[in-house]
Image: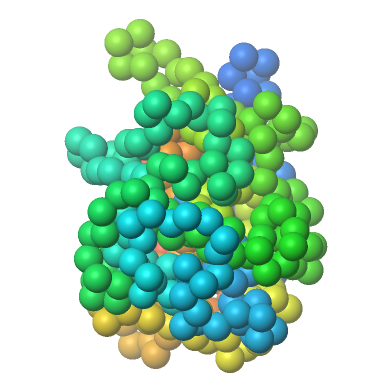
Length: 333
């Protein structure tokens, strides 16, 4: 594990199985200017990985019969929704099959560019702030006829949560997910009001060969589409809380972590990967934006989570694959 993890990774790696540590490591600085190191309890932004919390909150409302998968978005929200097709449902948003235009676009080498002009990042502090960025974009395809990862869909889901609960999105997630799952270090924190022990995200300037803060490259506060702060310990608690039925019924968790699109690689708020000789999929969440790279997987059968969070944009996907393969090799010996 040490041999695999030492290759320029900066951040935190945590592997746990049935509440027992297999491997833990924290490297690099949470705050370069002051030399404050990353620690196991450091709070990191996980970018789009936090869509899973939005999905769980929606599924909980469905279980409570306050919402249905087939409810139409236009019937639920009191906002002008521009070009969004009236046929778009809650289920379409959850599974990225709505076809609505997004506020992201792919740039060179697959990098994601945010289309916020003439808006400024500092203005993005609530879900409603995002609406002008996508509601007038043309539909990509008819609802339910394709798959296209869509952060805008999760913005709409967070607005639905606020409408039904009567609470701000972040307060509702804290009450219904973070507190029941014992996620004490998690929250949606504004960049200009960060609590203690938060990591700063760093980008790298190839010209000057220096790192710089991502504060002007990300939204001011997270939303239903991303930007929650959490710790590796909290994520382990989250996965186990799903498994033991603390957050949702076991029947709903089974649906959430099972394929919900024809291609089979996405459930509700989670990515899925087939496992050789296993009848259950490996579930994982991931996120990336300037100064943030994150992946956390959960093997429900083994009760094992593998989480990597970097505030320097390290290649967590490759390293996760290597660590997973090593664990599988070791367990088969």
